[in-house]
Picture 1: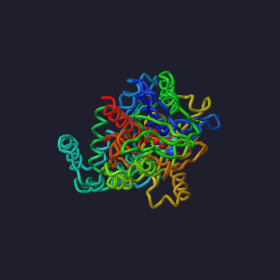
Picture 2: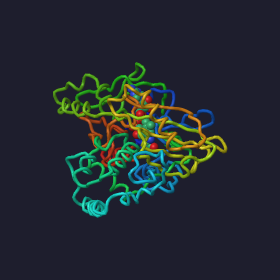
Picture 3: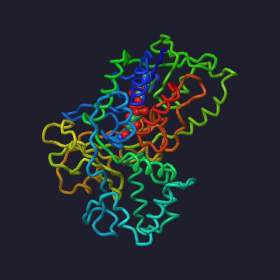
Length: 431
Ligand SMILES: Cc1cc2nc3c(=O)[nH]c(=O)nc-3n(C[C@H](O)[C@H](O)[C@H](O)COP(=O)(O)OP(=O)(O)OC[C@H]3O[C@@H](n4cnc5c(N)ncnc54)[C@H](O)[C@@H]3O)c2cc1C
């Protein structure tokens, strides 16, 4: 059996490794000269920056990605962050920014900043919602409806958590998806850092693919998915037909649909129009990453620092506490993330200035240099489908599946969602 994988991002590489291990003859086609997509390292001035991710796995060594890597025999050391998540809060409860001083609060202590009544309510809600998950509303509206939250503390915290982990605001995140995420945090634990950064993961997968005889071709853009009688039969790459029994696309549903050839008009192929409509409804999420170089630690630990009182920055990490080789000797690599809402994508320079101003307030008096600023939107986004809007991995074309961050599993944050989606797809294909 032959399988073609379109795109050598994390979703494509995980799928290719799994299929190669199951005995498929696998070919991966990648349009760029590099592999890994938004999950690889970019060397810059001795630092290992990244093409996308923050060198961090949302559920660390206990999560779905770590589990899938281990099943595939991909050797990656993943170190749990310690502490997992801290939240920078102003010293005085009524203050609205960091200018008069701040302290870092462990994430689990967040109820301590609520009124007594809200503390009791949230404790009850966190237990009761495990059985009866709320639906039908955004996280922000749900908080507003359930709690008094006088200082807007919980909404700010929700915005910074959603901004950091999903690149969304709490009003763009469904409360149902939030509770799936909380459930996964109980189940798998908090974040961790792969040694070697993103490339430590994607390179290990490439080793597995090569060991099983799979081939990865870079600078090879797929221009069409060949469909006959409602079935995928291969792809057109660099003008040549590549026949296959199975086609896996790592491009998200909309781009995948756009590549499907004339066979989709086949009267036997049901549901194509409805599928297109669902694919068009998926909105990518946008964001800005600012990479800092510092001689002294800025964050001071390997976990996430959420910054709910900043104007734009949602959170920051400092991965060199786990893997010092991600920076030149004696230096730290610190990366901040800020969500960009769809209406602000055309004002990226203003958004960057606001992010840089935030960093001065978050790290007053600290010495650091701005290494690199990257923005992500449209067809190179933070997430191809906003969390909670994924439509699954199947398509109306038989033998054609979509993986990656346009087709994540439920409650799966970023690469954990990709791993859940790939594992589910492979189960359908391989049984
Ligand atoms: C700023 C930022 C920070 C993030 N931080 C984290 C984090 O800390 N932790 C985390 O878990 N996730 C994080 N993410 C998300 C994570 O990086 C992505 O979810 C993941 O890398 C997406 O992988 P993918 O395989 O779905 O897609 P991609 O990486 O986009 O792979 C798709 C590949 O397909 C190729 N391609 C496209 N069209 C064609 C074609 N026609 N023919 C051949 N090849 C084609 C592309 O070039 C690309 O290489 C972050 C993302 C960003 C942008």
